[in-house]
Image 1 (tube, helix red, strand yellow):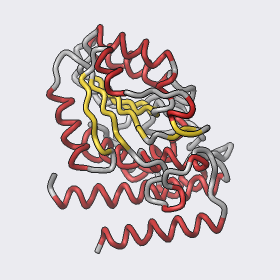
Image 2 (cartoon, one colour):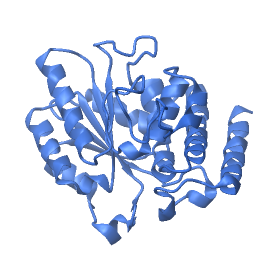
Image 3 (cartoon, rainbow, N blue to C red):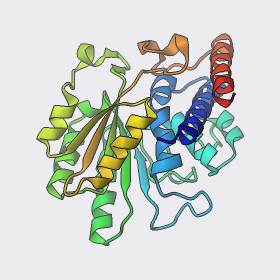
Image 4 (spheres, helix red, strand yellow):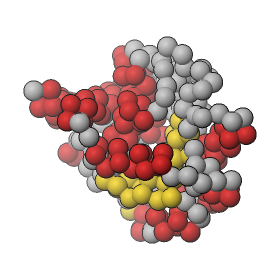
Length: 280
């Protein structure tokens, strides 16, 4: 990847993470851990991979995105705000009753959101339907969805995976945010979904394993997905829950807890320092 592009993506990903902290702190609730782990993927999708335009958010030929792990909406909102769908300051209104930014994505309230999600397992099914619809209508747009590694314990995920393979939906990419932590502990402690890659292979998918914080690997994976014909692609992104905030990294308790004022100040100081280093 071009060094200048990589630097721009790293800067934007850092800003997305700052939005995650800003939003959850002001809301006094939310899910910072998984939002931080998926911030690099969200940044790449909206600033490189997907054909979307904030000035024409309902363009019928746009690429579609479904956040199947809907509780990590703060990362999606950060990317949408940076892309110009709404002012970044709106993130401070996260989860307020009259806010356009609810705790889970709402296609009726938030510009740029293609599907309302939150009930785990359902998002990928919607994405499969969108991809099938594109094939039926002979449209060239692509469909992307992000799932949690805990979420894939839902049986509906595998029904959707089987259907996508049977219909040869090569216009569909599912990213699994594999941070190895869910609300009650590690995947192994709760209900292990490993080996994730082999399961998707068994269901007939093209599978790519990457470091979900490495933009070179992210770029290569999405390029391979575009080149694959006749199969949907699953990108298994190994990530760190709470990435970018030292005291949140790999700590299960930050799955669904907002930072208090002191924790907020520490997190924002760390992220601001990272941003200064990147912009230097």
